[in-house]
Image: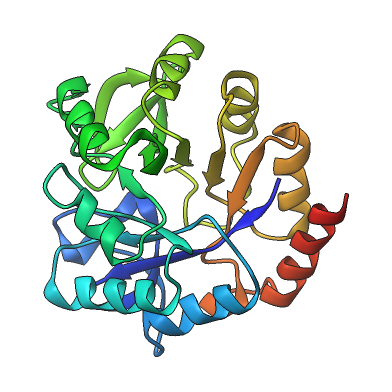
Length: 257
């Protein structure tokens, strides 16, 4: 298990947002943090600390947001993945700009179901090894379902063992935000982490609710050491209380075990 860093971009700014409030209505948006430093600053920090496999997420398609993403990739080429608006037409563009991998979500989950034809188009252009599938989800009934369109719309695609195995043949990693706790610093969704650990056989990153090192240890234990974790709002570099340097030290200890 390892810690994966993140950079979330919205309206040209590095932000931490409560995921469940993302919608077309700006008045509903809850921002935990807005940085006064550019995305390249954080990319440089992650590069210095030898953090790999992190992600940059574009939460809107403004020119300012794309510019920030490009500058971050220039600062840390092949050091971070990129997601948000990635499709068949621009996947290779982002790889050529320096993204280590591209993250696909709404493009392949359209009209409430997965579109394997569109996924195959990206695979043909970018290669399976460069694709991360975003399976960010919310619970409905007894199952977790992938959600799209700024995490507001449920798809019919549930995170069953069968479905996960099917997608493992189409990508190299999964990124899973536990949307209902994402950005709230309220603790992890243990049930989801356990499910992922029991089903997933390729690298998988969990995000959502992590508050402290104890929560990181809980992801490690519940995830059987198979599930990596990312932290946003809780880190002091994003206005939170968890010391970034403590997380780096924790991460280094995982490497030597």
